[in-house]
Image 1 (cartoon, rainbow, N blue to C red):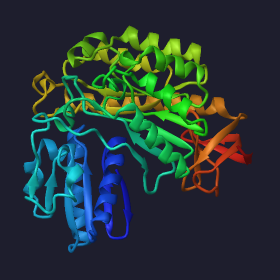
Image 2 (image 1 turned 135 degrees about the horizontal axis):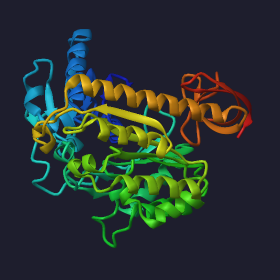
Image 3 (image 1 turned 60 degrees about the horizontal axis):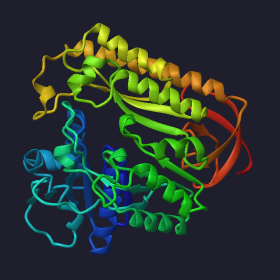
Image 4 (image 1 turned 120 degrees about the vertical axis):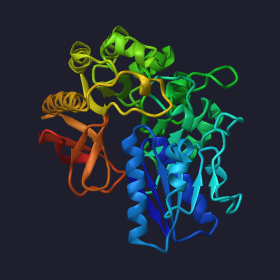
Length: 419
């Protein structure tokens, strides 16, 4: 969860970076419309826990400031508007198809949630700088055409759609004029970029076009990708473009072929192993993160061990571990469940494996001289997205630092000079 505020408009974002971009757009639109004393809660529906946390936060926000109006939007609001309509704390519920015009159409009905598939949706906002964040975020894609058996997000986001390439390039230029040194490309299914556009330009073509058109851009970073959808241009850019950061977060979910099949994923274990090995040969400094689900229905001990072994086999460093959460309306919700205690135990083991992998990575960085982008709070990010504690450095500044230690979670750096 993240919160951004300016004046009397506060946005509380849950979930993905796309929500971060859209939340910032909503905040600016509310301010431009002259709104104040307002909180916008931008929800996530990836897990039941995410939706529960949103409801809990809404109640807390109203207790802390009863006079503030609360508007709820995002994927959880799109998928289950009734849950939020039943909350007296909520003044208005907006679906993902309606929130772009939230402050253009006036107040409207209390619940404005349409069928996300009923009409062609406008492209997502390109985005840019986000209040309280060092890097700029560009949402270049929205929605998803796949139907993984555990995932409810397509019903919150609709069909895949992309920002035209020239519009992205214009947004990049605007970010650079605003002083951004790093831009992050994000989307619901980022590697599906361009499939709906004329000429079907793929993500790799977009990446190369950005780097070619913006020689002053210091860092370009990708959010989560699907390894099976990575196109040849993207792999070439990762291998040859130093300004494309050596960090990828992969939507892997499992390391067992039968579970992947039951998840309706489009890759197998061998695909993940091959992708990581080939990229590591081409870009030895690359670091991988991954989403992994513990305790998917029918997962037995052997299947889980295959996922656990994937952490070392793919040399995964930054793990996002999700205990399986059944989402009503998905095929997986009807499959035979794994016992809750077993799920919790498997999630714990995956997190421990992730902690150990991160500690090994951190130990290997000690003694190196790294280029860092300073964030707020005395920390910075290396090119491979590793967090480094650097002390008092202005946010947004590129610096060089000697890595003098690590504490198992972050690196400890001593600034040597401006990068």
